[in-house]
Amino acid sequence: MSFLDLIEIAKRYPGVVALDRVTLSVAPGEVIGLIGENGAGKSTLMKVLGGVIEPSAGTIRVDGVERRPFTVPDAIKAGIAFVHQELNLFDNLDAAANVFIGREPLAGGFLKLIDRRKLNALVQPLLDRLGVDFRPNTPVAEMSLAQRQLLEIVKALSLDARLVIMDEPTSSLTIAETERLMRVIAGLKAHGVSIIFISHRLNEVQSCADRVVVLRDGRLVGELPRTEITHAAMIRLMIGRDLKAIYIPPAADRRQETTLEISGVRTTTYPENAISIEVRGGEILGLAGLVGSGRTELARTVFGIDPLLAGSVKLNGEPIVIRTPREAIDRGIFLVPEDRKRAGLLLDDSIAGNISLPNLRSYARALLVRKEAELDNAGRQKQRLNIKAPAVTVEVGTLSGGNQQKVVLAKWLSMQPKVIIFDEPTRGIDVGAKHEIYEIMRSLANAGVAVLMISSDMEEVIGVSDRIAVMQEGRISGFLDRSEFSEHNVLQLAVGVRPN
Image 1: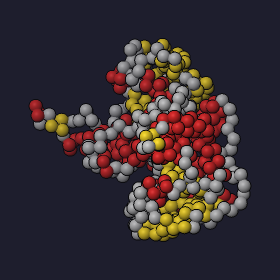
Image 2: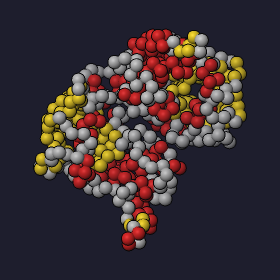
Image 3: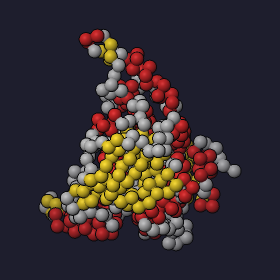
Image 4: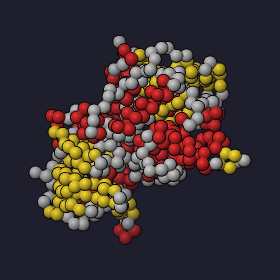
């Protein structure tokens, strides 16, 4: 017996059908995996369910009663809570204040002062429930990305929700934190709370979902009961075809010369530990490790964002000194950052403007950028990388995550890369776009580029890499060849144990 029903929901915008007669029911204590490529209509459907937008047609029923209109207060009253991928937290407040923002317990009579003791007492059991490593009075500004993600989940739990919608909730979590979240989901389910779990990580969907609902081009194209949830079945419904194996072997199986050699490098995060690693031309070297192991800090140091405390970097056997990103770029060392929206793109600029930005001199004449040359190059890159956009003049902020990532790649491919460092290359990207990114990475390697891929996605690390290096607390704990690849071996090295 369902408590929430969406019946024949449609949403139309000028020239676009975002949702086309979607019907979805939610039963108490049910975990529904909602999957689909970017642009499939998942976000629109959730906005309808949250009362943010009004459907063009269709009916919403809560406990059998039709609700029209269905507004944000109606959704909250119905017990619907969201855990958004884009975190909605106040950096200037602590954890407890964020959880009960606008609902704080008050004291002091007409003064209406916030009762901090009671507030902390309300929040602490919720933190204990998730087993987090921060306290009610921990400032959000001091929290890691993973801790902030967990705080968003605590906010949802504080609402005594009947339905919690989790949008990519594990995108910033470690393996241990993801396992903890899975236990939290099981606990919520046992107490009759329903979950809609939206994720591009299909192994997580397979792990927790009772039922999978698949959207494609705004339509509900199929459902999978628990007994039929497999990677292959989900992908087939999402993109309408089977995908090839994730690993794309090199064009030529020969040992390449070392392109990037990092020797005894010490970073500001782990100044006591030295890192030595080689990346060969023509290979994809996966860099694995737990969140906080120092992988991103190594990339930032090699790219010139953070200072190099000790050690050396060689490019094609020649020692180089990189103090700024400009010096790295001039030598052909490029970084695709973990957070493309904050560090990789100007969201309010056009595709063409973003692509030309690192190399404006090549488009300029007499210190003036030649728009025609800029647009011509952007058009070539758009076609080469299959960037889905009506024109290269559209703002990057309007594109899907996968297409935004392609724009980041396009600006580097317009130049002459020798080394490209990918930091979480497919975070928040749908399965179809992921494989396009993997194909681009392999084509770069086949062209002789040295590719260093940092990833927390175990399936990605094992499926894409030619070799794997594993970091643990600022040091390389070991290397694995393809014949040694396994999740067990990677995790053993990640915690500092040499596998048998």
